[in-house]
Length: 373
Image (tube, rainbow, N blue to C red; front, top):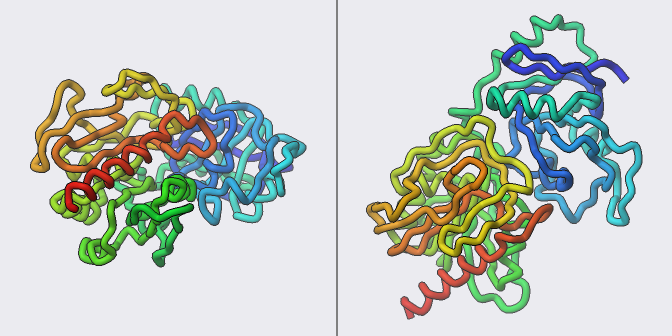
């Protein structure tokens, strides 16, 4: 096992050992605080162009299986762990974590203090990062390479992860509604959560036009999660405004939440180090209930927290708030059937406190059907 180096753009270098594939890889350094769910993280397209640092020290003991994959490949640019498990011990496991990383060409590093790296990023903010193994580059040369990388702010990445062709996830049991899901990096668990409620989900490319959506006669439209800077999604924001004008029930999560916020006229901004992991406390401002939720976002919506706000689509309000840092985690309109949340209600690897949001979407579509009958 050769030496490997994790190099941050502030010049910090952490020395460890090569793991999975050797070579060089680059991205935005982000950390995930989950003790489990690494398979869902790795296969989540929202992590495209990111190097994930797992804060929990022991990763890989439950192996990998086909049922928990959120997409057909691993999307992370690199993977950082302290102590990968030397054995796999789970009845569902089909292969090891390292085997999957190698088959997907992912460069990794082990034996570094991931909690120290996490504290560093929490203090100084997300940074560009490189992993170098089996390299002859000097320390200065590695830092220079990392500093030449583009920032995540200003990155347009949706086309990289969106489906190239539409596909259908059929309703389980009786079909009640049809939903068009705009894929900007959708996770497999999301349409599955809708299908369990009798919703037939038509997953379409992010470049799908309003006319094409209307021609499908959907009962609702879903905006998926995804990578990149929401400020670059000018065409998608314009599309969402057409959907809102048409009063087609709309539900957005994560990246979709940020895009809905911009469609309502709010700005988005880069968080210092983002929210990632399956243990984020969010308060439902309508009910007062605190939910433990799964997050993966580096940007947020700048919306007023107190009282209602006014938009061209009618009044709205902030529905959810992160208790760690006061970030807006949900938006809802009062006169147009549309709402969004910044986190993952499907949460296949984590808590299920937010599953009710799919039921809320179902209710919005039912109310629209009754009103239009």
